[in-house]
Image (cartoon, rainbow, N blue to C red):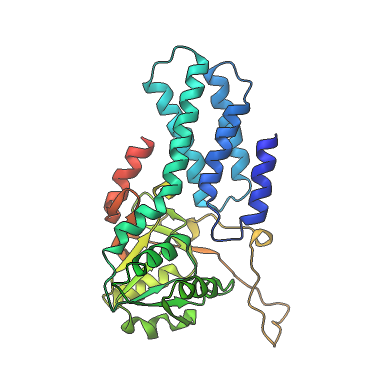
Length: 312
């Protein structure tokens, strides 16, 4: 179908980029499925949407954001059908399209809402540490700096092996924010110099923990050891019905799907040496101080309550 080809083209073009909002793109695609559907009953339409959702997830089984976007819209569709009365099937489809457009609009507006909530935690003279490039975190920091009443520094990890910290440094520097880039292994050394940690998230899970790019968990551990607050900024459509207990519980990209390669050195590795290059890790809720979301400033325990409202 044309709707899938459109999504596929956008995914191939953008999936390696940190600005791609895969969950919103998935919801838009499911809306297009409804628009192009030839179903004559609600049951047929729900089956089409479920098949479409399964197809979209094949683009990246490790993308929590993509999975959450699909699940959120499917659950919203089911709930809307169960709780509403429609004159006919066409009236039902119109309502579902409206629900989808509302979710997309909310998703696109989420970052500005998060920036307003998080801004109150950044004070003049602070030093903030973050882990590489994150679209939401960068916009929050730029929003806070735009007031001209706050002048703060940002310490950015280099974020090997893809080096997204350099992109973060450029984005923030262009906005007039002073940035210091550090090696990933220098987090413990630098933690005594910062006032707070602010990271993004690929997914917010049921127990209030987060899944994010590799290195986030160790930053949280160091922050807690130094008694520094560890904040997370992420959109509510990244809430995922997952309950990981160990790092091995996370979905992982296949090696050929990863948009980066193992670190290259002048001295090649021996042929028998294996390279383990995980893309993300899990940070448990007891390491997190607060989460800045478009639903408000939440404690980790409050994430479970919001997930219940969204999915149950």
